[in-house]
Image 1 (cartoon, rainbow, N blue to C red):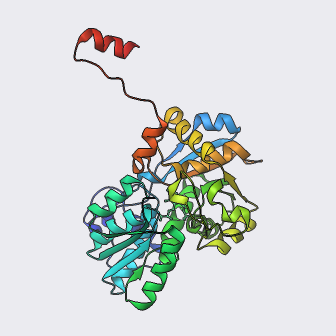
Image 2: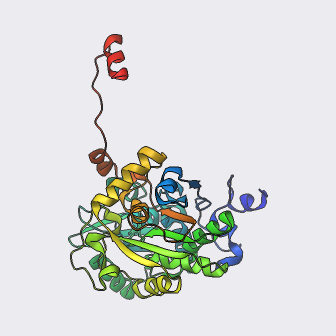
Image 3: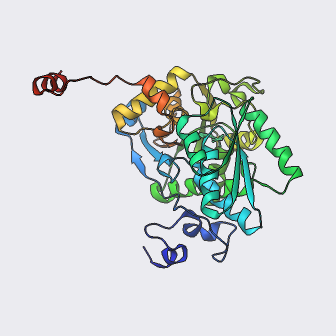
Amino acid sequence: MSPEPCAIRGGHGHPGLIHRFLDRLPFEASDPIVTLQEGSTPLVLAERISERVGAEVFLKIEGANPTGSFKDRGMCCAVTAAKRDGAETVICASTGNTAASAAAYAARGGLGCAVLVPDGKIAAGKLAQALMHGARVIALKGNFDEALELVRELTQRHPIALVNSVNEYRLQGQKTAGIELVEELGTLDALAIPVGNAGNITAYWKGFQEVGHSPRLFGFQAAGAAPLVLGHRVERPETVASAIRIGNPARWEEAMTAMTQSAGRIEAVTDDEILDAYRFLAAEEGVFCEPASAASVAGILKFGVGEAQRVACVLTGHGLKDPQTAMEQSGSVVPCPPELAAVEKAVLG
Ligand code: F0G
């Protein structure tokens, strides 16, 4: 890897995605680029899932981004643009990951940050991140959809930059994941992806189109929060996959257009199906993602992949984000006194 991009950002290792994809993004090298070296995430073959669906299935491990989710791809761009354009504070509504990412990039860029999250409905790791990065965390007695409506109104009245995926820079950054997939795999027949606010699926489609590729988009929503599948808003969305507990996606129209253009489909998976895939990924593939991310794998296990021979599943967030669900879904620890015989028994079963 050439040393130049590293010199620009004063770091080592792979360049962040703005540097890597500078020719495809609305930035100049002279902009005040805010990066944590996001992007360039692992793409691993999932042998056991491949066997089960009868196609080659790859996992795009977006939990390997700096704050543990794909949001960093969009956030480095949204925060860089906010900083370049003179904003002092950024704000978002969030089910958790956007909040953690906004807080981290705002801290990195020297900006203030406020996040509105549904009270009691965000995973512990995400809350810890937002707080540690110094964001003002506001627990709304309401759901994500209400929070988004409120921050949209607030940013009409105050000079605060909105960094939800209604912000075009978010999609610009997130499209790079689609481009990475095509660069690495050459061809790709289908993409399986969890859908909440519908920004990410829209961004992948944008990325694919830019490099002249049209894999079928298989979008999966949680059954209790599946407005795109039902064709109407869900007033009280509910799912164990708290990241996608959304009843009125902001990018509704664009996501449906992308789905149609790609000859794809949008389907619902139940919480039980999501949790089965979540445990399977961890126990059989060695990949720990958060519940919402497992919806992509749950979807292809349930509905198959049609004629597709090569499929990528987007694992959007890291399993450590939600330790509570993990502990509820896994085995218990083995208590043991500090004696060899007891340890022997405990180890050998
Ligand atoms: N997976 C995870 C882990 C997420 O955090 C999200 C969205 C999605 C999938 C869905 O992506 O909204 O672009 O369709 N999380 C947002 C948040 C809503 O606030 O962190 P989407």
